[in-house]
Length: 442
View 1 (cartoon, one colour):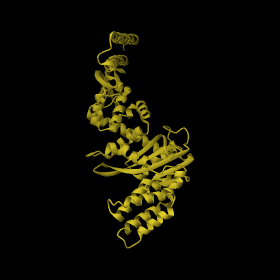
View 2 (view 1 turned 120 degrees about the horizontal axis):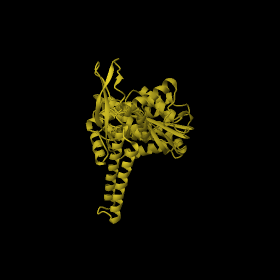
View 3 (view 1 turned 45 degrees about the vertical axis):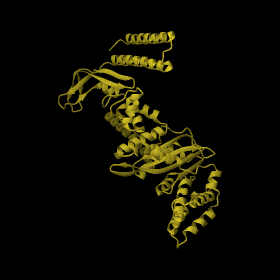
View 4 (view 1 turned 180 degrees about the horizontal axis):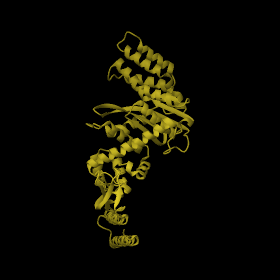
């Protein structure tokens, strides 16, 4: 192992020399490229120091030698063979190591203790590289992601390795997520990370579904959101997202686990916003406290009115818009009696639009307790599910519904969850967790 003091002195001297050289040159004259060229030169100096530090780290780490023999899992003995070189990709460049290599003659297994200690897997990357790879590949297609890192001068892996890393990191984080939900469902052990310091005064929850092509056909991803809102019904602070391609019961467990972070039962005002999907309202009924206020998303209500207008007057008719606007105004102003009288008029039998009229009358009658929009607005409650509809696009659609994309369901689940982590403002915490547990990341 290298003498640490001597290594430090060498690095400091190299750094001092490089900085002095650059500053003296700058004192003589500003380069023709101005600040841009100064940045380039400072960047090159930083790379030079990074490489010196990596070289020093490789020298002081040693080779991980643990004696001439190690016990093997098969019951035999692993023998030290020799030192083997390897270049490990880090966020600062390549780290060159010489590692003691052990081999078992009985079962032919091998071990490299230094790799195990450092958490090196796959083609050989640091956890920082793995986490960065998983992040950018969850945000954009892998090829674009690796090109972007290259353009930014950030060390990156091959396309195929980026796919492996992203799947591995994603699958592991899904396992962590599911284990957390299982502990809450089975033992009421609440999550410990990302917990709100106190229950929000006003909490809104919503859920919706969107589809992506997985395992040969389209499967639905269920998405949920949690956010605090102010007296005007506007979201404040960070929104949290939950997503899964698994069934509704699994979604409910994940959603319920997230609800514990928000102290949902103790929120003074709790508003649940959704469309007419039965699974959303069943989830609210089963998992929300009794004081929850259910709100039918106003924009879904408007879409249903447009459906009836088209049935009555035909596609593109100029009579449809003023009629829809009139019905929306009735809902927003609390004239619900007149609103339902209007629907019953168009649901009367004997007309070409009667079937559609009856369908929409049934829809609004079923949701009659969820359309008191005038009251909701007076109380400062949100009446639109734009937050979760946006989540369906940003968490799932933007990455997984591009033209021609086909996914394995497990990979789609991993990518969607990584995006939910990022959109929830929790990526830094995930990165730290991966560093604490590197062998379970890659």
